[in-house]
Length: 433
Image (cartoon, rainbow, N blue to C red; front, side, top):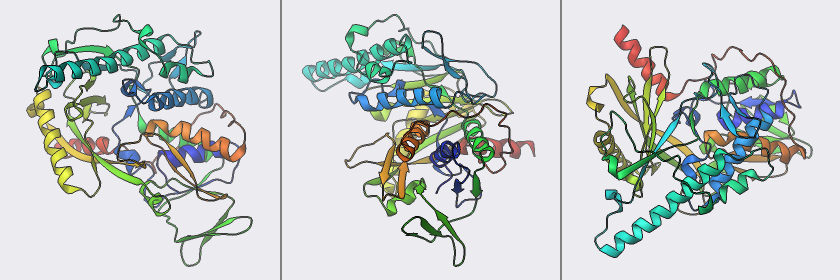
């Protein structure tokens, strides 16, 4: 149930050993809701390398390994390991990832976001921030040269400490088009990449179809009844589906079964043409001042997608208005040429998360509703692969087989583009007309 990235990832991996997998989507197009909203940032773990919580980084590195181990037969997958087991990306015009570096712009100890009303408060802020940054640098240094073929590599990298610290990869920032004091920041290349979301989804969907999978679009269910040997899904007053297992991957829809599910909204700005020629992530101790910029492709040229660490809960309109004002001010104060772009628009992307506490949770989650019914949340678009692999193992008590290497260029007319791509396309169409 659900044709987003979680639904297709699970459907595809289950279809490798069964030709009786059915994907149900209530919309006209696949990948048309939250999976379309996201801004095309594939996470290897760089963003979470400075966090005290090791689990996010550990999970993202495991996800990277799962992709390499279980998706290597996909011809357009351009992420691989070299002979030493180090992570590498190949440049490919139609690969899953655009081989373009993501630069992390990191606040240094004299950054204004570390100021405090008193001397001791400032010292405390500096020490706390520098501890996080040294952890960030140390983890990157270890990942850069670590053999990911080792079984516990994701755990070892997440536990990197100051022994691995070196300023060898740290540089002085020099970016045209942004308004910063270069003395308040340093720069370092991360491992994350811009991703071609529709290419990834299209490959998974093509594999699913070639494996014998069935898709039902514009199809919602009315009820589910559990029998002794199967589940019966009532689609309307007459049509039913009988199935051994049901996986609910329908985003906000799982709120019907699971408590502590929250929908967050985050602002994204789209500009055409691109406002910068770099992918940049600005990190400071003040989450409200963080900002990120990614370049994406269109047949008419590159465009920009700008995000931040800001978010609000769905339905909290007062918080949403405040988040929007902060985001707009941040964009104006960071980008030099924001007023000169031909097109800019802000939309709020939605993300469904599970958390028993009042804080964000970026992990994927599998819920056992019964022995025949399950619900899932991917956490992030990037994490859908580990989610699919782990669910396969749970249901089959074995590792998933590798797919067959073959041409996957099937018709993808039933798959939505990213929302930001659609906005740019609409603008270009208007001016051409």
